[in-house]
Image (tube, rainbow, N blue to C red; front, side, top):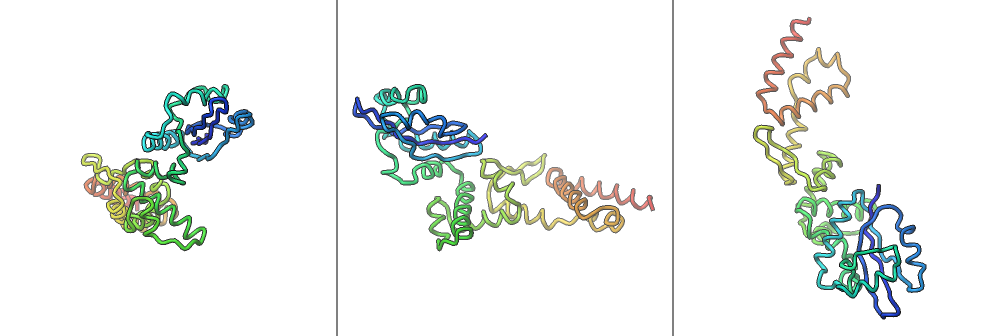
Length: 260
């Protein structure tokens, strides 16, 4: 289910109050706030951002509230929430006394960037650059985009390199704040370093086990099956090291030799 971060303007004409509330919800924004927007107080939805997971929307909301906390309205915001009827029952601590767009037109993105890791910032920068330069054909420099997201051109480039080597699923896995074990089960090395991961996936991609070159095996399996086998063996090497693969290779070689 999609999750949303909303930013709405609330007005109480009787009290001569105007405030701007940030919040998160699921489902249709239009349906939820239909009665609120059509009320006589002229409330309005200013911005809605969509997220795949609620925890992402909540994280950005928290970043906004923390970054712009000095602009919060306080208890007087309770009067504004009364004008919303049952649409917004609580949340006066999430109402700002001024429009955050007057401080930063892209306040939601700016707030969320500050809470990202260096790897997440680099991925965000690469995606923005790719979207604007590659997909939309805009003339934008990598340095400009990198600076916007608080990273470097080198890191932006690394994010793109890792995408090509490891794929979108791995990049998204890192973007969600996860790390990858580039060591073994006995000696783990969990990292989200782009430079380390590029080196790691370089080695994975170039790893060619003796088993893969065995003519008997190549005759018995399709290309897809061989790729699956090779991937499984690489994962075993990553977790347990060369010793296990050496023993496994010997066992398979002996089995194949005596099956002829």
